[in-house]
Image (cartoon, rainbow, N blue to C red; front, side):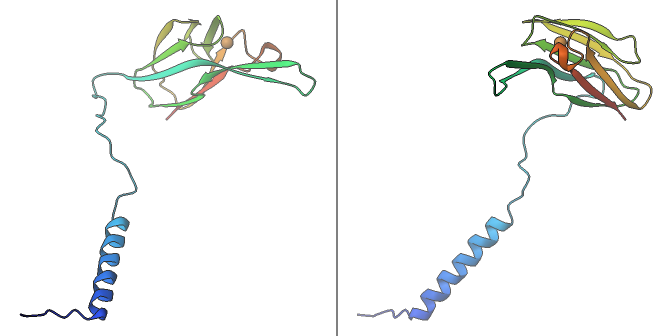
Length: 149
Ligand SMILES: [Cu+2]
């Protein structure tokens, strides 16, 4: 009968190597999680999706407060390229809006989607303003910022 002798230091060495391999494998994992999302075709206009949202709260005295918002509150739009902004009315009955410095305007109604095709030829930040919720007294300001670059 033949015996195989394993020295205790070989076991320690094996465990150390195993630890180094597992740690190395873990550290080599990419920090970015890749998805299978596909880029929008250059021929199709890019679509931004917004919703009308409402924040509500109470003062310490129990008085109710609310504020309407566009969500997301800021979008980045490429200069000179037509894009679509789809706005869905979730909170608030009606939000008539305009984009400052342009002729773009419309209305977003609760439960309905408003689609706006826009193209900006000048760089800058344009404000998408709801005309009935434009300041704190009117439960606003309901303003989104469209940054064109
Ligand atoms: Cu509004």
